[in-house]
Image (cartoon, rainbow, N blue to C red; front, side):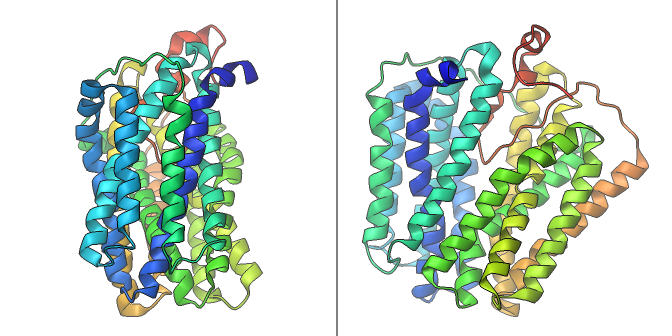
Length: 419
C-alpha cells in the first residue's frame, strides 16, 4: 500500500490541505451569517448556491481543463477559490455571498476533477481501488480537521477567512512543484436521470434523499447549533463529531450492505438516522456530550446512505455503463443538495431550529418507506456484483478508479474484493 501511495503523495497532500480549508469554510459561513443577522432561510439560499455552482461546474470545467492543462487549471481554480473566500468578509451581503458560493462550488468541482483524473491516471490500474480508499480517507479526515480549526478562530473577523485562503493557496504548492505527467482527459458519458430510476429506483431515491439531508446538514447545521446557543468551539466539536462518525461508521455499514440486499441496509440506515434526528429534535442542547454523541451517530448513518446507493446502482450496471450511471447518480445527489438548504432554511424560519432535525427525519423516513416498498415489491439478484466504497462528495472522474469499471483487473486478483 505504501509503495502504491508514495508516488501520489503530492496530490494527496494538496487534497488534505485544500479540504482542511474548505471544510472549515462552510461552517464558518453559517456561524458568521448568524452573527450578521442573516435569517435561516437566507442562509439556506446562500448555501444552496454552492451546490448550484458545483452542478454547473461539472459541465464547463472539463472543457477548461482540456484547453489549458491540469497544472494551470489547478492554479486557476485555486486562485478563484481563494479570491472568493477573501471577498466574503469584504462583501457582507446575502446576494454577494450567494454569488461567491456559486463561484466556490464551480471552482471546487474543477479542482476535484483535476485531482481525481490525475489520481486515476497515476495509480497502477490494478491498485486504483486502494488509491480510491486512501483518497476518501484523506478527504474525510481533512474535512473533520477543518471543523476543529473553526473552534480556534474568531468567525467575526478577517483572520479565519484569511486562514482558509492561505490553506487553499498552500495546497497548490506540492502539486505545481511535482514532475508528474499531465494525464489525458476522456469525455465522461451521460445517462438520463430517469433511466437511473428505472434501473434502480431505490438508488435514485436514496441519492436524492441523501442530497437533501446532506445539503441541509452542511449548509445549516452550524446555524442550527448557534441558534441553540452553542459557542463557536462547541459548533466546531459538533460538526467534527458528525464528520468523524461518517468516516468511521461507513465501513461496517458497507460490509453489511455487501452481505445482503442493499435495499435492506438502506432501510435500516434510514430508519436509524430518522430516529437519531427525532432524538436531536427532542434533545436540543440540554446536554452537550449527548448532542455530540447524537451527531456522531447521525453522521455515521447518513454519510453512508449515498455510498450504499452508488453500490446498489453498480450492482445492476455492466462495467461499460458504470461511468455514465455513476455520473448521473451524482447529478441526482447534487440536485438534492441544492434543494436541501433552501427547503430546510425556509422551515427553520417558520418553525425554529427544531425544524432542521425534523426535516431530516421526514426525508429519511420517506426514503425508508420507498426502499422497503421496493424490497417487498421485487426481489433482485445482483447482475454485476459490486463492492461498497466509502465516499464523500466527488466527481465522475473518481468513479473510474473503482475496480468495478475494470473487471479484468478483478479477475486477475487486483482491486477491491467483491461481494
